[in-house]
View: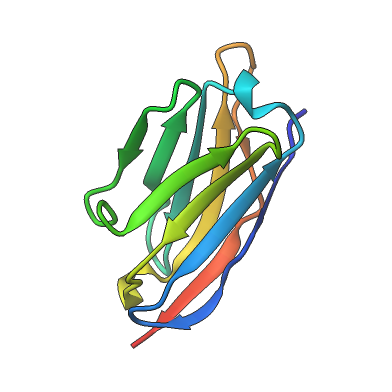
Length: 117
């Protein structure tokens, strides 16, 4: 069982920044892929960014150049630095972890990000 706990969400104005954190209960270097997903009001959950164990990153077109995914291996924590936030970034942000060694992937409970115009 892997537990993921997100934090760092909040209410900000357009153009401001936030940094989300996802604390994992296991060594992140044992996880093949970690990522951030979001679900806005009335929308399906969508990928925001992923980071592989080897350090490869992938971003949704809508956030590329504004968001940065990173990891602190010593603290077993995944981050999402979100800059130049837009109202359309308003969503609940979820952390995900997956490994070929597991029978399933894992999700955190999410953290709410609200961007006002």
